[in-house]
Length: 140
Length: 312
Image 1: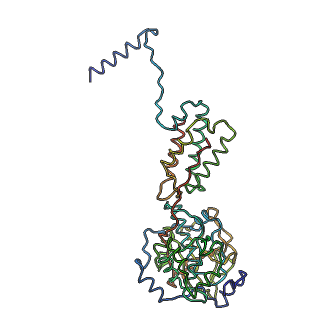
Image 2 (image 1 turned 180 degrees about the vertical axis):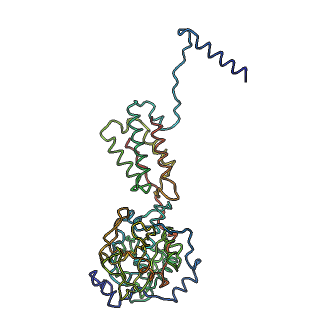
Image 3 (image 1 turned 90 degrees about the vertical axis):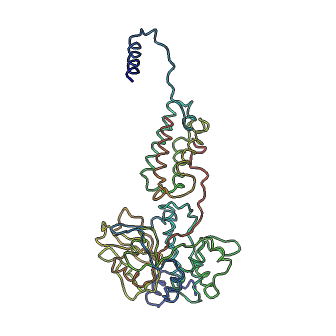
């Protein structure tokens, strides 16, 4: 352990005092994209990523507080109508192939597609909010 | 005999002064039902003391026109039992997350048609037995069998003497009320509502069509031989300084709503009666109050998608 620590310190000191031109060039670190949403948005601009992330963050907030959205069907209606409102007339719908399916699968994995309630014993509201927040995080 | 009451006033008069007996108590039918029932009386899974349950609000979320169907013959028991099972069904779907679909409101006619005679009125126990053992139907058209898409008191009235046709009974068999329990006390009624079970009861009791000074509908005499569903209670004392009960009548807009209605409540339904313990006691004391649970409704339909396909 002592030896390992000494070695790390030595490497650190050598690195710090090495002349700039002689430092080895390492490629920039690219975060690994593991989620389907992240993969679908791999080629997306920063602005588009931000638009998608902001929308799903806002939707997560609405779902967490809404007393009007009580069923899976109710969520579906709000989700589809608000997507239309948010992105209709922009170039986003269909721009990133597979994004709609990736989001769909991520949400369905959390709450299923059966039209049941979101509250009470199902615990689906919390799961849905978490899934929406994950879509937003994966989009960023 | 059916559609005897064209106007609401006529219907109220018939119950109040005309001796119309929509609720027909039958100790024999009650005993027969209980003898074949796994549960003799309601056993509460949780206490609703100090809380509230406003079950009609859940039903209205799924069926915005619920509780507006106005009876036109002495079939109040079938309206009361339908409204009770709709409460249980809505809570099961919206709160308990039972994988079922609302589809549509359910019908009253098969239950009333099972009353066992051609006259007016029915015993709540007999209605319970039919819905437990035979079932109920949606308010829909069943091609080649019966059209229940619009309330038609003539249908149930006609079946009274001859019995519900076998083809209709066969259709009913798909949807039954799993558990029906007799409720004996007001605290049990409160607990049943708190746990999401709709209630209906037959009793000889009447309420004024105008709210009184306590922001409730006072009791009046003579009583109605009538069955109604209890669709909520509030024991929080937040808006009334005493426990109140909410009874759904099946007479349409027959009364004036209470003037001070809490803004956090779901909207008042047509003809709702608001009463206190003293007024509600008659509903329990008649010993013909039934709690409906485990209503076997319609299987949940999987949705085509959750909203994102083709939109982003």
